[in-house]
Length: 571
Ligand SMILES: O=c1[nH]cnc2c1ncn2[C@@H]1O[C@H](CO)[C@@H](O)[C@H]1O
Image (cartoon, rainbow, N blue to C red; front, side):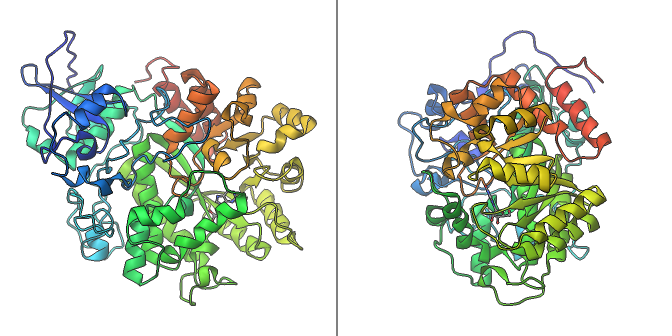
């Protein structure tokens, strides 16, 4: 494939949005413009830093006729699926509303709806699925038709899968572009094959192009690794509304905005208060096969758009089931979806997502603090599906809860050790260092979920530094759950950074925290002084502490090294 590089500055003109409206950030799905130089036949994107003069003038040019397009309607202030939802009100040390540095993924405009990359709402719902032409929130935002493979759904395959058969990551860009038949980009410029007219760049192709341009323009340097992300804390609000409506399950709102008023928040609550948020929407999803598979698929799509290269997604199979689980969660009537089948469905969603969005996704099965009786089955499911996306066991929930008999958790973790199942435990998030000690010495955890309160026990901290224990840090979450002080300058991550501890940066529950990975990178950059070098280090530590098998871990690390320019070109 011929690479073209234009050494001289070329005159670029913005490509009109598909509807000609004054909001490229909404139409293209992110605050950037697609520019074209007709003379040179060269294309490039111009990133519009949200709130920057360029963004404001592009998205709200003086005299623009507002209201001429759904993306300029007031209702579009509600975030779209997969869009970057920045906190609406900010804590004293406000997290930034913009991308968190070169390694942070590009922030999507708050007003923008992320382009749909192909979940088959038609296939699932006979049209009108989440984000479709007549979205469940009734806003009817314009949406490109899903790419479909034209096949029927009898094989259970997600329709639309396999249309863009690209290898993962940003390594091997030539291959990606051959497969996509998209422009080849060098130095942020692209040569468009002449046969691909501008019209074709409209969604969904433009969406795919934009995603790849973002990655390529950064030289792939924003490839991130996310290790602490709850599937059920990361569901698209549109999807919740859709299944609520479809299944006749009442929700606290009929629109995304109304729903989010109840589900998400931006001033600190306690951990138990935060956990209550799940009650508002889980009944719409739990017990439904299609919904379970779909939320897994959509989360992979969201993470791909955010620039995450590898993600470990955790959930409790029992909390998504309505059969063979006692008590049946969320007040559901008994059905026929078992925890075992939940895992199977999530696996399918993750694998479909991996195939369609070209990132790597693995899963972690959660035991719940308040339900030790579920834990033995959780470890059995980890064993059964260990070669099928599941990489580890976790213990989640309210760590302040006094549970009489926790032997179920202990037995499960013993069995995990015995069988070589990887282990992580939520500990020291809101709870004291004793919880971390229990996780490390009793449950033999290999990573700590959160772990902020380790700093209150200097001896323990020293020991965990020595053993390179990995801390799954979630900055914005730690503010909103009241786990840490509101002043980010005093956040444990500041100390971790100083001590060169082993930790990652994660979102935790982005639906409830109204956030994306960008929010957390932004906080660490703007309030804790993290640099690009820190972010590289964080992500390499995360990859090293991932629960991937050694060979795959090494592949991931190699990809990061290359993306970060840390090794000579390996091609
Ligand atoms: O930050 C957290 N700390 C403790 N538990 C959590 C957190 N976020 C979510 N969950 C719990 O984990 C379950 C499985 O995903 C969720 O249903 C929620 O109850």
